[in-house]
Image 1 (cartoon, helix red, strand yellow):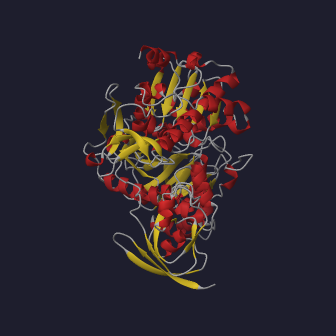
Image 2: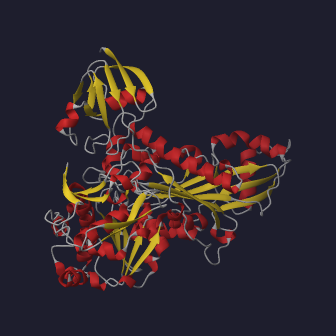
Image 3: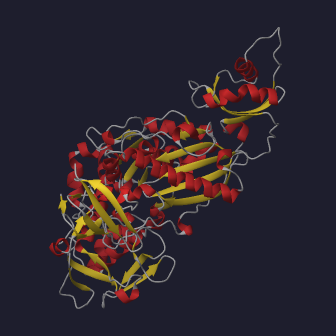
Length: 640
């Protein structure tokens, strides 16, 4: 194949690369050292990898999201356009994965569970051993000698890694046959032998810190808590956006990208990079080192766990939607690639099904649903829209593909909840002028999820939008106008914004939000119908996830995202997934509870449920086609 010279130019870089005919522009850019984001996983449906070909020709497989004028100006989708000759390509400023999370959105108040005792709760045990040295009369090998000493301490079966086995002889002799062993005992599963993690020839006192980490791998954000296991205290909390976002903003996009050449390896490397960067940061703050961490518990949806471990995830998105494994065996830091002690334990918590993972089982544990007497509805308002209904006697769960709209994706001026995001909006019912609040103060850059919910509700209740989400263009306001993508509302004029461009809310944006909220609402209504429970009989609604903590209940009910019930029944819990991982890290009884939750939870696959589509279509209106479901909203509308 003929090779071609491609010159890439951005605002601060000029790189040249030689590639063969048929190479995707995005791959050519990567070979030149320039990363082009692919938020839809390279499917060509988001339009946010558009680049401008200023010299030469490319073959465009798709022009979705590109206007006729843009194509005439040379714009092409980098993930859908192939090289056919020498090219000059300008890469516009790319959306960056903002690492400056607002600190008040990542820190959680957490206290050590009452009565925590490391001796009875923790799987890690420090054991001080004195071995009889070998002699001409006692020819027992070093490993057997060590196992015998451990057996006298109640450890019947033990294994260790090859790397540690190679050091055992020298460590025993260096310590003159007196050593401190750190053992992970796995008391919650007697079929798994204990594992020797470290063997130290120096005496390690029981007061010296013993470190562990609890990790939640979210589709959007990775959260890590560094825990001192002797006291049980969370010493450091850190969070950062999951760098996999650059290759897909939802799990389906990431699965598709991971199915491509080297995609699986890149996805694994990206999430490991995020985790290990957080681990370094946390350890620096605690004045320790990553290899001093001896155990990690990890929660996340099924796709995130598969991508972390490099397990093919393609079966998750294909009927009948089956994972490779819902219950992963204990692994080591070395095997997983997490930079804790190479022989330290990595415990990926058990999930239920393809779209109900360990983030939900951990959330059920930390929220206490599995021990509650009252009927409880648990919602994780994220890209997967997971729902659990039940109490201590029964649990059922489902998931619906809500998409990343509430994370700001799929919305023209949507963004994540970081500095510069509009998080709350009020619209005057007479002038239709907005007032808004920006995270961090200052000029706005875009709209985050809570701001989008607030804006949609305000525009509906002030009459700017009808039930179907259509704008009333007859209203006397310059903010309501026809734009490039149809009718739109100007939230902030260019003179008010960071980049000098109007921040607008288009009909396309509205459709994306309506689909997201309709999927979530239909999911939990179908679930209640399946088990014969009426929504009004639900005693409490618990909302997990970092995003859920900032939802305005009133606005969420007004758009039909949440059920219309008394506000006192709602409780926003924040990141229940990492909290559950923390409890499992501390106490093997909690870890056992998560396993039992996963085993007894009944999963309902909505794609095989004919009533879900009907419920989804009925919820595609503001707030719903059946206003009897939203009596308080109907009363407000009648009054207005």
